[in-house]
Length: 116
Image 1 (tube, one colour):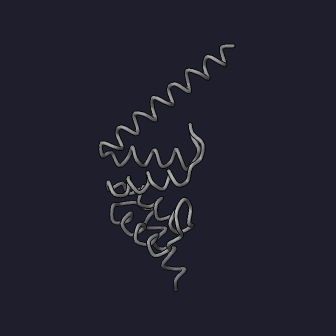
Image 2 (cartoon, helix red, strand yellow):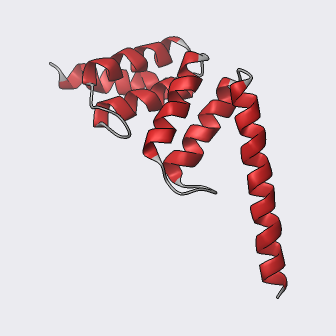
């Protein structure tokens, strides 16, 4: 029976955390927007929603979050939650690398090597 109570408490905490992240992201936190993208992409606390993940990564990228830029690039590369656009993917990988993302730089290099 305590498992049910623990589950209810956990669900309430998750809902509170989601509300906090939404508030922070709407106030201009790129890292909060990135975390929301991760939550929706992975289906953590919520059902997986790749279109919403894309929207939150887009917001995080526009707010200067390098990881959001990198993940947005990957979504465009694969057409995950959005229309496939390899050229736009490369643009986001490049921006991510410029902001200091090693993963963005690696993805950019892989795309460059594949195009030669």
